[in-house]
Length: 219
Image (cartoon, rainbow, N blue to C red):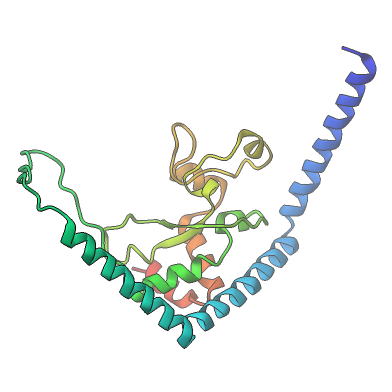
């Protein structure tokens, strides 16, 4: 290898390492983290208020109702043209696993998801980063009581999609909550970021529902 090229390569590597160390120091600074969270909370509050105004707009409500009416009409038309099932349903074999029905979502739970969906990923916020969009992650599945309230907003890389290797090399805390092969899973996710319950409290606080979260977590 050319000596000059090797020296330039080493210099670039050292510069990259110094930049990485500066970034780590910046992200671990409590004052910086507080500023980032304050800005995120302000943006989230503004977004939530904008969404509330939109949902209370009579014109918007009328449009949504019209969309729902047309969707119902389309489903009815499809049902009319659909041929009846001729084959009887197969009986469940003895010893097979029973499928539990997912709990339906209440109006307040849907509103909660809308509010949380305006936030950045709460796991990324723990490290002074903001990432959109987010998915609503269920901490307790979808069948238990209040399951639709034990939720947190996570980006795809923190939820169920492994981040690219070059991203993980720079941000070792980018671990998916749902394991993909040997990567991720709840223990690894919480060790790299924070406990799910702590993230839930952070998210609820940002949308003005802190007391509600404390009551839920006390159950």
